[in-house]
Length: 361
Image (cartoon, rainbow, N blue to C red; front, side):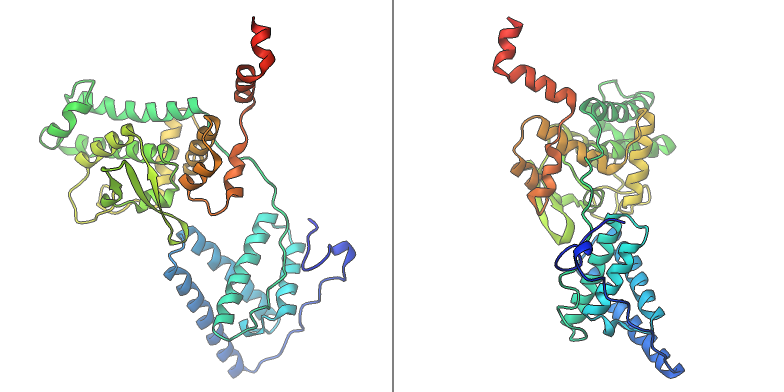
Protein backbone atom coordinates (compact mmCIF):
# COMPACT_ATOMS: atom_id res chain seq x y z
CA UNK A 1 0.00 0.00 0.00
CA UNK A 2 1.25 3.46 -0.86
CA UNK A 3 1.93 5.54 2.25
CA UNK A 4 0.36 8.95 2.38
CA UNK A 5 -1.18 11.36 4.83
CA UNK A 6 -4.72 11.98 5.92
CA UNK A 7 -3.96 15.17 7.82
CA UNK A 8 -0.73 15.94 9.60
CA UNK A 9 2.04 13.38 9.64
CA UNK A 10 2.46 10.05 7.86
CA UNK A 11 0.52 6.91 8.79
CA UNK A 12 3.62 5.39 10.40
CA UNK A 13 3.91 8.30 12.84
CA UNK A 14 0.24 9.11 13.35
CA UNK A 15 -2.67 7.46 15.11
CA UNK A 16 -4.54 4.98 12.93
CA UNK A 17 -7.37 6.33 10.79
CA UNK A 18 -10.64 6.53 12.66
CA UNK A 19 -12.87 3.48 12.27
CA UNK A 20 -15.91 3.76 10.05
CA UNK A 21 -18.99 4.90 11.93
CA UNK A 22 -21.21 2.08 13.12
CA UNK A 23 -24.15 1.07 10.99
CA UNK A 24 -27.56 2.41 11.95
CA UNK A 25 -30.87 0.66 11.75
CA UNK A 26 -33.72 2.25 9.84
CA UNK A 27 -37.41 1.56 9.66
CA UNK A 28 -38.98 0.90 6.28
CA UNK A 29 -40.46 4.41 6.19
CA UNK A 30 -37.15 6.02 7.18
CA UNK A 31 -35.29 4.01 4.54
CA UNK A 32 -37.66 5.22 1.85
CA UNK A 33 -37.20 8.84 2.92
CA UNK A 34 -33.45 8.31 3.11
CA UNK A 35 -33.25 6.92 -0.42
CA UNK A 36 -35.32 9.79 -1.81
CA UNK A 37 -33.11 12.31 -0.02
CA UNK A 38 -29.88 10.74 -1.23
CA UNK A 39 -31.18 10.53 -4.79
CA UNK A 40 -32.24 14.17 -4.71
CA UNK A 41 -28.86 15.31 -3.39
CA UNK A 42 -26.95 13.23 -5.95
CA UNK A 43 -29.14 14.42 -8.83
CA UNK A 44 -28.75 18.06 -7.77
CA UNK A 45 -24.97 17.67 -7.56
CA UNK A 46 -24.72 16.11 -11.04
CA UNK A 47 -27.02 18.79 -12.46
CA UNK A 48 -24.70 21.39 -10.90
CA UNK A 49 -21.72 19.80 -12.70
CA UNK A 50 -23.57 19.82 -16.01
CA UNK A 51 -24.34 23.52 -15.56
CA UNK A 52 -20.61 24.09 -15.14
CA UNK A 53 -20.17 22.41 -18.55
CA UNK A 54 -17.67 19.82 -17.38
CA UNK A 55 -16.61 17.33 -20.05
CA UNK A 56 -18.64 14.17 -20.61
CA UNK A 57 -15.63 12.14 -19.44
CA UNK A 58 -15.42 14.11 -16.18
CA UNK A 59 -19.16 13.83 -15.61
CA UNK A 60 -19.04 10.07 -16.15
CA UNK A 61 -16.20 9.75 -13.62
CA UNK A 62 -18.08 11.82 -11.02
CA UNK A 63 -21.19 9.68 -11.48
CA UNK A 64 -19.22 6.48 -10.87
CA UNK A 65 -17.37 7.92 -7.87
CA UNK A 66 -20.55 9.31 -6.35
CA UNK A 67 -22.30 5.96 -6.77
CA UNK A 68 -19.46 4.23 -4.90
CA UNK A 69 -19.48 6.81 -2.09
CA UNK A 70 -23.24 6.60 -1.60
CA UNK A 71 -23.15 2.79 -1.61
CA UNK A 72 -20.43 2.90 1.07
CA UNK A 73 -22.53 5.27 3.18
CA UNK A 74 -25.67 3.18 2.72
CA UNK A 75 -23.86 0.00 3.80
CA UNK A 76 -23.23 1.73 7.12
CA UNK A 77 -26.72 3.12 7.53
CA UNK A 78 -25.55 6.65 6.76
CA UNK A 79 -26.80 9.38 4.44
CA UNK A 80 -24.98 12.11 2.58
CA UNK A 81 -25.92 14.41 5.47
CA UNK A 82 -23.63 12.28 7.69
CA UNK A 83 -20.50 13.28 5.75
CA UNK A 84 -18.67 14.78 8.69
CA UNK A 85 -14.92 14.86 9.25
CA UNK A 86 -14.81 11.38 10.78
CA UNK A 87 -16.88 9.79 8.01
CA UNK A 88 -14.91 11.44 5.19
CA UNK A 89 -11.62 10.24 6.65
CA UNK A 90 -13.02 6.76 7.14
CA UNK A 91 -14.01 6.57 3.48
CA UNK A 92 -10.64 7.91 2.31
CA UNK A 93 -8.86 5.35 4.51
CA UNK A 94 -10.82 2.49 2.97
CA UNK A 95 -9.95 3.73 -0.51
CA UNK A 96 -6.26 3.74 0.48
CA UNK A 97 -6.48 0.12 1.64
CA UNK A 98 -7.97 -1.01 -1.67
CA UNK A 99 -6.19 -2.11 -4.81
CA UNK A 100 -6.90 1.02 -6.86
CA UNK A 101 -4.03 2.99 -8.39
CA UNK A 102 -2.94 6.22 -6.64
CA UNK A 103 -4.40 8.33 -9.45
CA UNK A 104 -7.77 6.57 -9.11
CA UNK A 105 -7.79 7.05 -5.32
CA UNK A 106 -6.94 10.74 -5.80
CA UNK A 107 -9.80 11.18 -8.24
CA UNK A 108 -12.32 9.46 -5.91
CA UNK A 109 -11.25 11.62 -2.97
CA UNK A 110 -11.51 14.71 -5.16
CA UNK A 111 -15.04 13.66 -6.16
CA UNK A 112 -15.97 13.26 -2.49
CA UNK A 113 -14.56 16.70 -1.67
CA UNK A 114 -16.55 18.27 -4.51
CA UNK A 115 -19.74 16.62 -3.28
CA UNK A 116 -19.08 17.75 0.28
CA UNK A 117 -18.46 21.32 -0.93
CA UNK A 118 -21.77 21.21 -2.83
CA UNK A 119 -23.63 19.94 0.25
CA UNK A 120 -21.91 22.53 2.46
CA UNK A 121 -23.06 25.33 0.16
CA UNK A 122 -26.62 24.05 0.66
CA UNK A 123 -26.15 23.99 4.44
CA UNK A 124 -26.36 20.19 4.66
CA UNK A 125 -22.86 19.44 6.02
CA UNK A 126 -19.93 21.26 7.57
CA UNK A 127 -17.71 22.97 4.99
CA UNK A 128 -14.60 21.60 6.72
CA UNK A 129 -15.77 17.96 6.70
CA UNK A 130 -13.34 16.87 3.96
CA UNK A 131 -10.54 19.35 4.63
CA UNK A 132 -7.01 18.13 5.30
CA UNK A 133 -7.43 14.82 3.48
CA UNK A 134 -4.40 14.24 1.29
CA UNK A 135 -4.24 11.81 -1.57
CA UNK A 136 -1.38 9.46 -2.49
CA UNK A 137 1.38 10.98 -4.62
CA UNK A 138 0.98 10.24 -8.30
CA UNK A 139 3.80 8.79 -10.32
CA UNK A 140 5.09 11.40 -12.75
CA UNK A 141 5.03 9.41 -15.96
CA UNK A 142 6.28 11.02 -19.17
CA UNK A 143 3.57 11.84 -21.71
CA UNK A 144 2.63 9.14 -24.17
CA UNK A 145 3.60 10.74 -27.47
CA UNK A 146 4.87 10.13 -31.00
CA UNK A 147 7.95 11.48 -32.76
CA UNK A 148 8.00 14.32 -35.27
CA UNK A 149 8.63 11.78 -38.03
CA UNK A 150 5.65 9.68 -36.96
CA UNK A 151 3.40 12.76 -36.81
CA UNK A 152 4.43 13.72 -40.36
CA UNK A 153 3.80 10.15 -41.52
CA UNK A 154 0.32 10.07 -39.96
CA UNK A 155 -0.73 13.30 -41.71
CA UNK A 156 0.90 12.28 -44.99
CA UNK A 157 -1.00 8.97 -45.06
CA UNK A 158 -4.28 10.74 -44.26
CA UNK A 159 -3.70 13.20 -47.13
CA UNK A 160 -2.68 10.36 -49.44
CA UNK A 161 -5.96 8.59 -48.73
CA UNK A 162 -7.94 11.70 -49.66
CA UNK A 163 -5.74 12.38 -52.69
CA UNK A 164 -6.18 8.86 -54.08
CA UNK A 165 -9.97 9.12 -54.07
CA UNK A 166 -9.87 12.58 -55.64
CA UNK A 167 -7.56 11.48 -58.45
CA UNK A 168 -9.86 8.52 -59.12
CA UNK A 169 -12.75 11.01 -59.32
CA UNK A 170 -10.98 12.97 -62.06
CA UNK A 171 -9.13 15.66 -60.15
CA UNK A 172 -5.46 16.33 -60.96
CA UNK A 173 -2.88 15.04 -58.50
CA UNK A 174 -2.43 18.60 -57.23
CA UNK A 175 -6.11 18.74 -56.32
CA UNK A 176 -6.18 21.65 -53.90
CA UNK A 177 -6.51 24.43 -56.50
CA UNK A 178 -9.48 22.90 -58.33
CA UNK A 179 -11.19 21.20 -55.41
CA UNK A 180 -13.18 24.15 -54.12
CA UNK A 181 -14.66 25.09 -57.49
CA UNK A 182 -15.53 21.63 -58.75
CA UNK A 183 -16.33 19.40 -55.78
CA UNK A 184 -20.04 20.09 -55.54
CA UNK A 185 -20.71 19.72 -59.27
CA UNK A 186 -18.26 16.97 -60.23
CA UNK A 187 -18.50 14.34 -57.49
CA UNK A 188 -21.68 12.42 -56.82
CA UNK A 189 -22.92 9.34 -54.96
CA UNK A 190 -20.92 7.10 -52.64
CA UNK A 191 -17.57 8.41 -53.85
CA UNK A 192 -18.64 11.91 -52.87
CA UNK A 193 -19.52 10.75 -49.33
CA UNK A 194 -16.22 8.88 -48.94
CA UNK A 195 -14.16 11.84 -50.16
CA UNK A 196 -16.08 14.11 -47.79
CA UNK A 197 -15.16 11.91 -44.82
CA UNK A 198 -11.51 11.59 -45.86
CA UNK A 199 -11.15 15.37 -46.10
CA UNK A 200 -12.89 15.85 -42.75
CA UNK A 201 -10.61 13.29 -41.10
CA UNK A 202 -7.56 15.09 -42.47
CA UNK A 203 -8.86 18.39 -41.07
CA UNK A 204 -9.45 16.75 -37.68
CA UNK A 205 -5.95 15.26 -37.53
CA UNK A 206 -4.34 18.57 -38.43
CA UNK A 207 -6.35 20.43 -35.79
CA UNK A 208 -5.35 17.91 -33.11
CA UNK A 209 -1.65 17.97 -33.96
CA UNK A 210 -1.10 21.47 -35.37
CA UNK A 211 -3.14 23.20 -32.64
CA UNK A 212 -2.70 20.75 -29.74
CA UNK A 213 -6.44 20.47 -29.16
CA UNK A 214 -8.15 18.04 -26.81
CA UNK A 215 -10.72 15.78 -28.49
CA UNK A 216 -13.63 17.61 -26.84
CA UNK A 217 -12.18 20.96 -27.91
CA UNK A 218 -12.00 19.88 -31.55
CA UNK A 219 -15.57 18.55 -31.37
CA UNK A 220 -16.75 21.83 -29.85
CA UNK A 221 -15.34 24.11 -32.55
CA UNK A 222 -17.94 26.11 -34.42
CA UNK A 223 -17.72 27.79 -37.81
CA UNK A 224 -17.29 31.25 -36.28
CA UNK A 225 -14.43 30.00 -34.08
CA UNK A 226 -12.07 30.04 -37.10
CA UNK A 227 -10.83 33.63 -37.14
CA UNK A 228 -9.25 34.42 -40.48
CA UNK A 229 -8.32 38.00 -39.71
CA UNK A 230 -5.67 37.08 -37.13
CA UNK A 231 -5.07 33.38 -37.81
CA UNK A 232 -6.52 32.20 -34.49
CA UNK A 233 -9.02 29.63 -33.25
CA UNK A 234 -11.42 30.35 -30.41
CA UNK A 235 -11.16 27.18 -28.33
CA UNK A 236 -13.62 26.29 -25.59
CA UNK A 237 -11.59 24.30 -23.08
CA UNK A 238 -12.03 22.66 -19.70
CA UNK A 239 -14.09 24.40 -17.05
CA UNK A 240 -15.81 26.66 -19.61
CA UNK A 241 -12.52 28.48 -20.20
CA UNK A 242 -11.95 30.03 -23.60
CA UNK A 243 -8.53 30.63 -25.13
CA UNK A 244 -7.07 31.76 -28.44
CA UNK A 245 -4.92 29.25 -30.31
CA UNK A 246 -2.93 30.06 -33.48
CA UNK A 247 -3.14 27.82 -36.52
CA UNK A 248 -0.85 27.24 -39.47
CA UNK A 249 -1.65 28.37 -43.04
CA UNK A 250 -1.57 24.67 -44.00
CA UNK A 251 -4.18 23.97 -41.31
CA UNK A 252 -6.49 26.66 -42.69
CA UNK A 253 -6.05 25.27 -46.20
CA UNK A 254 -7.30 21.85 -45.10
CA UNK A 255 -10.13 23.46 -43.08
CA UNK A 256 -11.20 25.26 -46.26
CA UNK A 257 -11.11 22.00 -48.21
CA UNK A 258 -13.40 20.51 -45.59
CA UNK A 259 -15.72 23.53 -45.66
CA UNK A 260 -16.13 22.96 -49.40
CA UNK A 261 -17.00 19.29 -48.84
CA UNK A 262 -18.95 19.85 -45.60
CA UNK A 263 -22.64 18.89 -45.90
CA UNK A 264 -25.10 21.76 -45.99
CA UNK A 265 -27.04 21.73 -42.74
CA UNK A 266 -28.22 24.06 -39.99
CA UNK A 267 -25.71 22.84 -37.37
CA UNK A 268 -22.87 25.33 -36.97
CA UNK A 269 -20.29 22.92 -35.56
CA UNK A 270 -17.16 22.83 -37.72
CA UNK A 271 -16.72 19.05 -37.76
CA UNK A 272 -19.77 16.94 -38.58
CA UNK A 273 -20.69 13.32 -39.19
CA UNK A 274 -22.20 12.16 -42.47
CA UNK A 275 -25.63 12.72 -40.90
CA UNK A 276 -24.92 16.36 -39.99
CA UNK A 277 -24.38 15.65 -36.30
CA UNK A 278 -21.41 17.13 -34.41
CA UNK A 279 -18.51 14.75 -33.93
CA UNK A 280 -18.15 13.39 -30.39
CA UNK A 281 -15.04 12.14 -28.64
CA UNK A 282 -15.78 8.49 -29.48
CA UNK A 283 -15.83 9.46 -33.18
CA UNK A 284 -12.46 11.17 -32.72
CA UNK A 285 -10.93 8.06 -31.08
CA UNK A 286 -12.19 5.88 -33.91
CA UNK A 287 -10.96 8.22 -36.67
CA UNK A 288 -7.50 8.73 -35.14
CA UNK A 289 -7.10 5.03 -34.38
CA UNK A 290 -8.01 4.05 -37.95
CA UNK A 291 -5.69 6.70 -39.43
CA UNK A 292 -2.86 5.47 -37.23
CA UNK A 293 -3.45 1.87 -38.28
CA UNK A 294 -3.17 2.84 -41.95
CA UNK A 295 0.13 4.55 -41.12
CA UNK A 296 1.39 1.53 -39.18
CA UNK A 297 1.09 3.36 -35.85
CA UNK A 298 -0.88 2.82 -32.65
CA UNK A 299 -2.22 6.30 -31.93
CA UNK A 300 -4.92 7.82 -29.73
CA UNK A 301 -6.11 11.46 -29.92
CA UNK A 302 -4.38 12.77 -26.79
CA UNK A 303 -1.04 11.54 -28.14
CA UNK A 304 -1.33 14.18 -30.86
CA UNK A 305 -1.79 16.90 -28.23
CA UNK A 306 1.19 15.51 -26.29
CA UNK A 307 3.18 15.35 -29.53
CA UNK A 308 2.38 18.96 -30.41
CA UNK A 309 3.51 20.20 -26.99
CA UNK A 310 6.62 18.00 -26.91
CA UNK A 311 7.72 19.03 -30.39
CA UNK A 312 7.23 22.73 -29.61
CA UNK A 313 9.39 22.32 -26.50
CA UNK A 314 12.02 20.44 -28.49
CA UNK A 315 12.17 23.37 -30.89
CA UNK A 316 12.84 25.78 -28.02
CA UNK A 317 9.41 27.32 -27.41
CA UNK A 318 9.17 28.89 -23.95
CA UNK A 319 7.27 26.86 -21.36
CA UNK A 320 4.96 29.78 -20.55
CA UNK A 321 3.98 30.08 -24.20
CA UNK A 322 3.20 26.35 -24.37
CA UNK A 323 1.16 26.68 -21.17
CA UNK A 324 -1.04 29.36 -22.73
CA UNK A 325 -1.21 27.45 -26.01
CA UNK A 326 -2.46 24.27 -24.31
CA UNK A 327 -4.72 26.03 -21.84
CA UNK A 328 -3.05 24.62 -18.71
CA UNK A 329 -4.10 26.27 -15.46
CA UNK A 330 -0.76 25.41 -13.84
CA UNK A 331 2.76 25.68 -15.23
CA UNK A 332 3.55 22.42 -13.42
CA UNK A 333 1.26 20.57 -15.82
CA UNK A 334 3.15 22.00 -18.79
CA UNK A 335 6.54 21.12 -17.33
CA UNK A 336 6.00 17.42 -18.00
CA UNK A 337 6.82 18.30 -21.61
CA UNK A 338 10.26 19.62 -20.67
CA UNK A 339 11.58 16.10 -21.20
CA UNK A 340 13.22 15.49 -24.57
CA UNK A 341 14.27 12.33 -26.30
CA UNK A 342 17.80 11.05 -25.87
CA UNK A 343 18.52 11.53 -29.57
CA UNK A 344 17.30 15.12 -29.52
CA UNK A 345 19.29 15.86 -26.36
CA UNK A 346 22.46 14.49 -27.96
CA UNK A 347 21.87 16.51 -31.15
CA UNK A 348 21.41 19.75 -29.18
CA UNK A 349 24.39 18.90 -26.98
CA UNK A 350 26.73 18.33 -29.94
CA UNK A 351 25.58 21.55 -31.59
CA UNK A 352 25.81 23.64 -28.43
CA UNK A 353 28.66 22.51 -26.16
CA UNK A 354 31.71 24.79 -26.53
CA UNK A 355 34.09 21.82 -26.81
CA UNK A 356 32.01 20.10 -29.52
CA UNK A 357 33.17 22.53 -32.23
CA UNK A 358 36.83 22.00 -31.32
CA UNK A 359 36.37 18.25 -31.39
CA UNK A 360 34.88 18.44 -34.89
CA UNK A 361 37.70 20.70 -36.02
